[in-house]
Each structure stands twice: as C-alpha cells, then as structure tokens.
Image 1 (tube, rainbow, N blue to C red):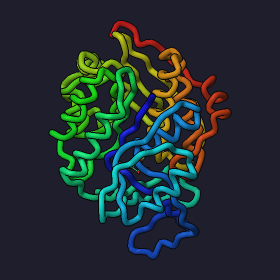
Image 2: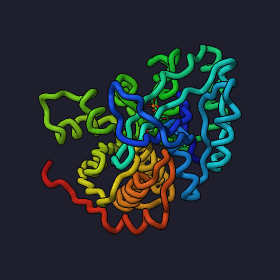
Image 3: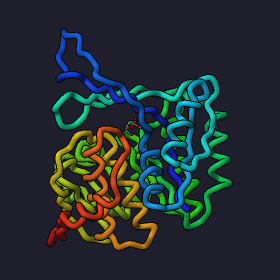
Amino acid sequence: MIYTITLNPAIDRLLFLEKTLVKEKNNRLSKIDYDLGGKGHHGSFAMSKLGVKNQALGFCGTTNKSKLEKILQEKGINHDLVEVYGKPTRESYVILEAGVSGSILITEKGFRVSSYDIELLTEQIEEKIQEDDMVLIAGSLPPGFELRNLEELLQLLKKKNCFVACDLSGAALAKAVEVGVNFIKPNAFEIQEIVSEENSLLDNLKELSKKVDYIVVSQGSEGSICSHDGELYQITAPKVVAVNDTGAGDCFVGSFLGSLSLGKSLVESLAFASGCAASKVQYTNSTSFSVKEAKRLQKEVRIEKVQNH
Ligand code: TA6
C-alpha cells in the first residue's frame, strides 16, 4: 500500500487574469477556479489516476473542511485526514496571465498544528503503516510541526522498514537526507540549499547518494537528473507548450513512485513520469493530466547514462 502524508494541505485558488500582471494597475480577473493543492495530495491524485492503490493522510482544517472534502471526492482520492480543530486549510494562489506560459504561485503559511494534533497523526501512522509499504511525505511543514517532529516521523517510518519518499525543501529536506531516506526530489534551487557550492552537481549527487537510494533533481522543462545505485541518468523532457506548471513536479513524483510500486524498471518509471508531468503542464489547473497522452509523450523522453561520473 502507498500512503501520502500532506502535513500542510492547501486548496489552490486559480486566478485567471484578463491580461498580464502589471504593478500599480487594477489587474482584472476573467475567472477564478479551485483545485486540489498540497504536494502529497497531488501525488495521491496521480497514483489514483494510474490505478495504484493509495491513501492520503495528513492534516485538514475544520472550518473549511467541506471545501477540501468536495475536491478530494471529485478527484477520487481515498483519504483519512486528522482534523485541526477551529482552523482553515490554507489557500495557494495560482496566477495565470492571459497568453503567458507558466504560473505565479503564492502560498499561505498554513494553520498551526498543536502537539495533540501531531500525536493523533503519529498514532494513526503507527497503526496503519506496515513493513514494505511506501510512504511519500510531500510539501511544506505547517507552523508548529518542527524539524524534531519530522525527524521522529522519519525514524518511525524507517523502523517500520517501509520505503520513505520525501518531496521536501530547505531544512526539512536536509533533515530527510541526514536521517537517510529512499527517495528525494529537490528541484534545481532546492538542491543548492543542501549541498556545498564548491562541488559540482555530479559530485554533490555522489555524496547525497550515500544517504538516499533514489535522487531526482527536477529541472523544469529541461527535464531531470536521477542518481540510483551508483549510476547517473540525464532525462530530457518532451517539448510541449506549458500552460500551467503548478503541480507538474508532484505529478512526476506520484507517477514515478506509482510506477516503481508496480515493478516497472527505473528507466521506464522515469520516462513515464516525465510524460505525465509533460502532459500536466498543458492543463490550466494544478492536477489534471492524460495517461494516454503521457504514454505518447513517454516515447519522446530521452534518458542517457552519464558516463564516468
Ligand atoms: O507543487 C504545487 C503545490 O502543491 C501547489 O498546488 C500549492 O498547493 C503548493 O505546491 C503547496 O506548496 P507547499 O510547499 O507549501 O506544500
């Protein structure tokens, strides 16, 4: 079974501008839409779309719970969330300018969780997760969830001997590497925060690979670099016209882990996940992608082993 843990869930409010964003001007919206936010939830959406059995865990605020529940149900996501009483699940604002590729993402901090909330989540995880399960912890930490809480959670999962995947950034990502997990997916900025600038990226990956089995460094439309089992792979993404890149990395993570869990090879999982992410960026919301299109785009993905690194 795969579990995703979204410690800091979000509802994405998509803001479609009539024109491009201009300072000191009243920028008018042509429409507003809502979609699922939160990196772990996006991972669950991709896995569910691929028919990979999974359950979304984590927190959710009670004051706007029905809004998040409605979106989770629409997206067909099996979930069992711990309620943070009297607080709202935050919103992320995804700004889409008319005729401009890509999005501007502005994200609230999120509700503060108490030690009691963390205790409830820990008890639930202790009870649900079995040996050989796969667990994805993805997204930011909410206020109140400290690095020591993350360390305790990671140690608990490692003790269960499950596959621990982390899509984290900053100090949380550094903690995951320090503890030692099975998978991380920093983007090109995030990896710079945890490695030495003196060394080359390839040397830094070699160092990180001593603590992490699978490392994928996402490089947006350029593709990604993967380190696993002493080998380095350069993945070149298919060329598509991006409308909204929000959620593309999460789509990659969910479809990559889903593919691995189905026993697909590393190269096949990388190629398919790249196809899913390339499909996703062509949609205006934060989650949609087409499996059929992903399989077509997968054929355009190039994966080359980096020699003598
Ligand atoms: O990766 C995209 C996304 O999940 C958005 O949908 C938005 O909810 C944001 O990231 C949340 O990011 P955070 O790192 O704060 O969990």
